[in-house]
Amino acid sequence: MNKSKFGKFVALGALVGGVISLFDRGTRAVMKERAERVGYYAKNPGELKETVEAEVNKWTNLYETVTEQVSYYTSQVDELKDLTPAVKELVNETKEAFSEDEQ
Image 1 (cartoon, rainbow, N blue to C red):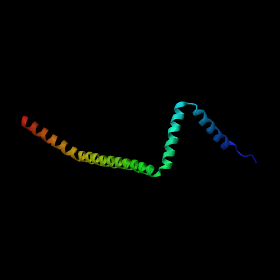
Image 2 (tube, one colour; image 1 turned 120 degrees about the vertical axis):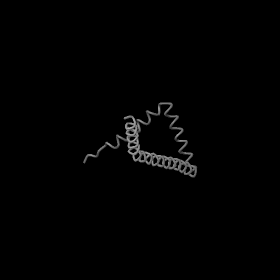
Image 3 (tube, helix red, strand yellow; image 1 turned 60 degrees about the horizontal axis):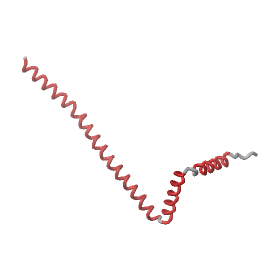
Image 4 (cartoon, helix red, strand yellow; image 1 turned 180 degrees about the vertical axis):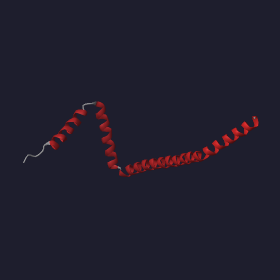
C-alpha cells in the first residue's frame, strides 16, 4: 500500500517557511523576545498565573460594565417607547385646544 506523504511534506514546508522567515531581522528580534518571555514564565509560573488572572479580571469587569450599560439603555428605550404615545396624545390635545380657541 502507498503511504501518503502529504503530512510529511506539509511539516517540511512549514519548517522551511519558518527558516526562511527568520532571514528577516525584525522577525528574528520578535521571535527572540517571545522565546525569552516563554523562558521567563517557564521559570516563574506564579507570575504567569497572576498576569492571566489580572487579564481575566479586567475583561470580566469590562463585560459587566458593558452589560450594565446595555441594560440601562434598553430600559431607557423601552421607557421612550411607552412615553411616545402619551406625548403624541398630549401634543394632539394641545393642538386641538389652540385650534378651538382660534375659532
